Image 1 (cartoon, rainbow, N blue to C red):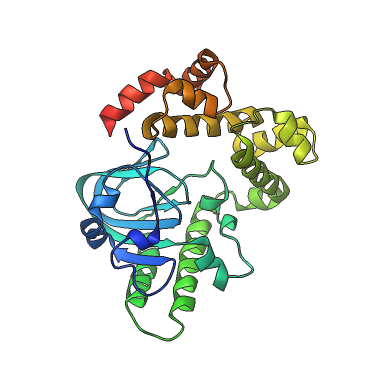
Image 2: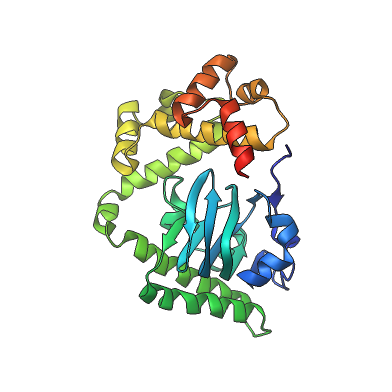
Length: 294
């Protein structure tokens, strides 16, 4: 068992001359970087990939998504993932840092896009043929621009990335855009709550403390979670705990008791019971099952 690697853009071949940015066709990307992406890993940057050919499974934070023509995956920094192909994957892949995007789009934050906004939103979008015909040329333009020496290259790349995110956001939100506008205040509070969870989940499991930090009642915080994602405040806190537990069980050198301690549980039996309640198996069963899988 080894620690989960966290990859940086500079580790990838053919990164090019633009700092904090990388683009490639997927076939070349896989060939050139097989050694560093053939096993589960994280990134410290944003990743977007469009598949135009190929089939398989993309495992993201222990959830499996089908790879097929027209599938788009959008990952935030810190997510764990790996690929398993049954037929050769072809398409386009883009990496960029938060700073690369926001230096040009100074009045925008990447969290405005639904696939980056919340941990509860899917990192996978499946395009029909018409939508793929709209999105694919944008990926191609980014690849071509990245290989050019044109003036204002960085500005054009960021604008093309922005267009991809806008078109994909329209696709994701088209069925519930009115609901989103009506509940904008709630969704922003959900976003704040998830940010606080990320900061505090190892030591703080109490919904009361999170509500007090946000200057709202526990009842109101619970209503926010229920109305936006259909879950309780405790559900969201424990989901983050269990996700980190799974990452450490598979990719750290700590034993199960040490992992429980790191996550704020002095009593391993309580931690194990909670893990089984949320995952359907004990930590040791999960470890055995998943190590066989990968």
